[in-house]
Image (cartoon, rainbow, N blue to C red; front, side, top):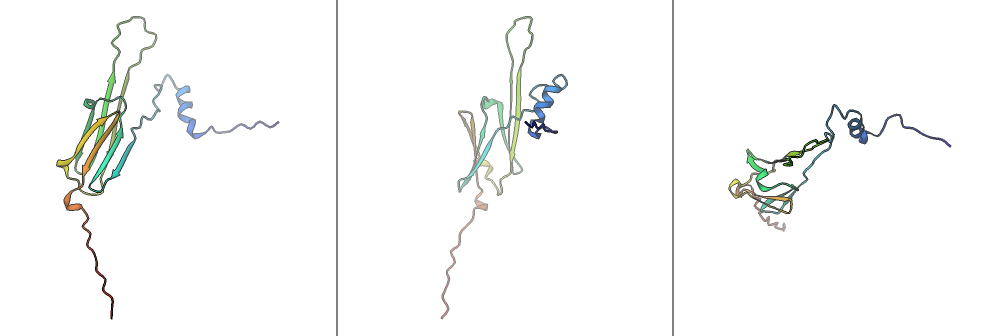
Length: 144
């Protein structure tokens, strides 16, 4: 029987290895990516941006549109209000995120709308009338 041992562990496991080896130096979970997925749909007259924001309340989220860039950010802190003594370990959750997207065309800023339901933030960015494509039919005449 031949037993093979890898000289270098998988590169995808390195954060886990470091987290175990340097637990005292680097807080557990430091390498965990808390990504808030974002979808952008072109509906013709507008862009519909949907962002996953599970666990966030609407007052914990900020949506800005400045100089043609949409910025979505959120910050949440949960604190334990228990007054028990002799904790061996007590954790508090604090998380924040920022997502940005630059639309390829000009947006009508006064018409931007945002709503939130079931952990999904939906933002509608209407396209500016100046940038809407006007189709001009071309009549092709046959040569005689």
